[in-house]
Length: 310
Image (cartoon, rainbow, N blue to C red):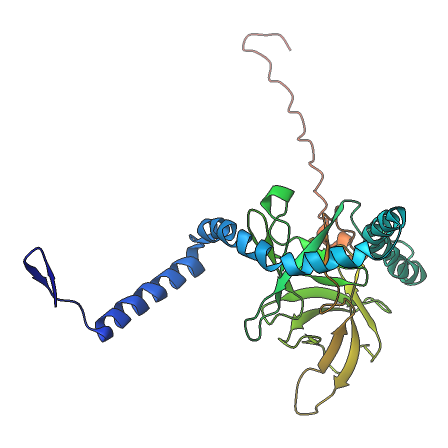
């Protein structure tokens, strides 16, 4: 009991407060899951945590500054920084030639396979890795002010890492391809067999499902993005097949693949703005529907007016 200005106020019990807070929490989670009404609030709250992250990063930045100070000549440091910033973009563009070579050998009628990676790309620094169990996400130091959009591809110099799932003002969250909630359309680079790579929750494993025993897939095959859906650039490396289990009691193969991107390495990722996706010719032909030719109606002869001499 609390006594305020002569009035006695009864304080709810601990159990009552716990039940009320639990109901409030569940209501907020349902409201956010169905309507995403708290997205703007979460994006605004990132501004409150930015100073804390900056203070926490001070020891790392000071240590890096001391290392650079003792490395030597200033001109060499500037040149090294320039080369280090250009390396991910150059290596990412280099990866497209392997897919181009395979496509020219098997499907020479494809057009535009040179545009596997968008020309516009931005290098973003990784701030932290999500600590939630069985979730594979990272926080990147780019946000709405940098023009990011939901579903934007996140790659590195070796392959696809994931895509942007949440956007804040100064930073965003990207879901990795190994996250259990992520699925990516892929195809075997050797023969064009299409499949879907699902995240397993493990840090370095994806699962290829719904392929039968007659499917032409082997350990060591390179899986590249198929470009279906337009979310990712066509032909960019995704994973390599590690193990195939053919259980006679199961309808589909159990295929495990290892991502080629260095998901647990590097402090920088590449955000790209893909151009129009390039799909195989047979997909394009299936998507195109020819419009029927409209036949002209025959012109009926005009009837002679009444009283006219034929």
